[in-house]
Amino acid sequence: MAKLIQSLKQWVKGVLSAQHAKKREAEIKAEAPHITKTMIVEGLRAMGIVPGDVVMLHSSLKSLGYVDGGAQAVLEAVHEAVSPGGTLVVPTYYLPGGTIYNTCQMTDYVFDPREHGSNLGALPDTFLKMPGIRRSIHPTHSVSALGPQAEYIVSTHHLAPSIFGEGSPWERCLQVNAKVLGLGITMGPVTFYHLLEDMWLDRFPLPVRLPEVFKLKCRDWEGQLIEVPVTPLDPQYNPRRIDNKARADLQQFFMDDFSRVGILKPGKVGEASAWYVTAQDFYARLEWLAARGITIYAEPEQIAKPVLE
Image 1 (cartoon, rainbow, N blue to C red):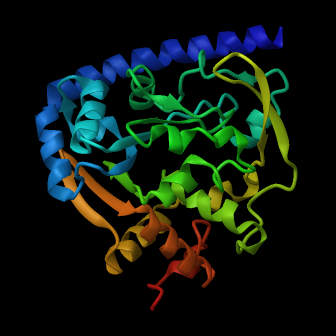
Image 2: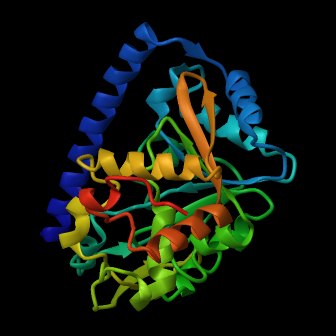
């Protein structure tokens, strides 16, 4: 019965989401400038995205303007910008509980990459339908990639001891020095931050990970049942975290700090402000700040003024 109720909730949510998306698309089409795939490629190239790059994409589709061809055109444009030889990486999370912790409480949940899409929006869902993608097997933070480095980036996620740490797509992106690209977003909704937490573990300034490790069930690509270790983030820190809408101050602090030290490269793609930071610069700066007590959970008084070199 619980499974049926959950399925009905997901169905209703999907219907409402589709209706909202259709209404929003009509509004954007009527009001916003029309953006073509060629314009997106040109904007990306102008800001420094070049063939051969590995790009981890975080994007707000509506911020770009009305894109002819929608999400498909955006993804094709980013892939074209890094081609030949480049790889596009897109978060395609399926998080049925809404948070890691809540998902870990769902005893009947089994993630199946062959059946479960993404609940992050149009871009991830569209990416999952593109030919040639590779998707990591993970019950909360599945990541997908397209290109020569795709298999390397996603293939060991289910074997990794943590969600974001060694062996995860984020750690693999660090190894290949991917460009973390934001299109029309702040520096809030960027999961690359969590790599530091899972690499530093007890060295991290705050105990943001719960002590319990859950073993969540997944199906692999052959349908075999496997268990993947998941350590939830402590929900008590959610209100303080940079991706909380109330933490615009923290989002701006990181934007200003990364810009001040010269690692954030700005641009404009379509109608959207854009930025990228190479993974190794990103991680090194997170380490430098964390060593001084500044993290994505910093209190307002900690970031009242710039952290001097």
